[in-house]
Image (cartoon, rainbow, N blue to C red; front, side, top):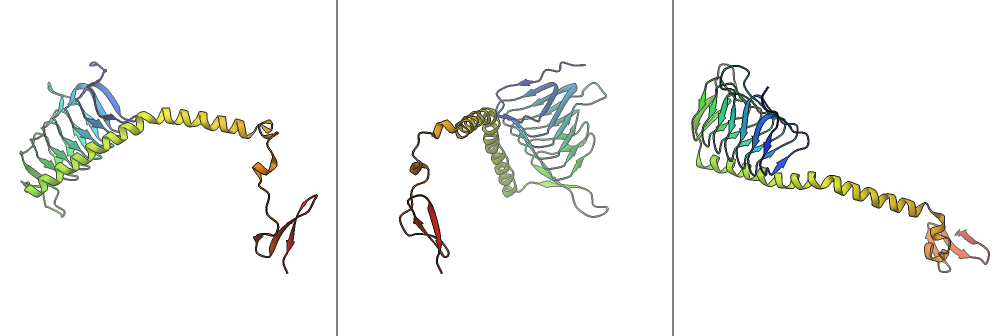
Length: 237
């Protein structure tokens, strides 16, 4: 089996539940989100710079043939639940929508978009600047057409949002352990103080329970009248 030590170069965010196995290379500024599996035990998987792979994605190097590698370019966004089987190439700026499937030998060229749930068959190519959509209805195949300028901006913006969120999640996950430990220490100390009766043995009672003025109204039909020996509450009839 190949080298099982992944290489991560200043990635922006790698979620704790991610599995990286084999010859995985992750570029600068990229993120890999929760429960994603990148399995490069049969061939290398390269993830470029500023590329964002969201939850429950599976990248699996090929099982047969001389070329089993997966290459993901720069500035690529891969949504939830995508499956990519090697060998496969996804070029710079491509966008893979949720649940799509890229079969061995397929290629997604620069700035192309693969729509939700679309299957790119083995050996097929999605041309640069096009979008492939799944058309509902029996007998209607997936169709490809050029992206409009408006669509291009929408997918660029979506990628930028994911990149910004990656910074938030990186901070959340790196600070969690330290924050939790600090909170536990503070909670334990406060519990110790509150459970120690000697801490308050010399504190005047009025500091803990301030005295009420004569005739203080306590609630419906009740007024407070202190006596010399005890506190009494009288019902107002």
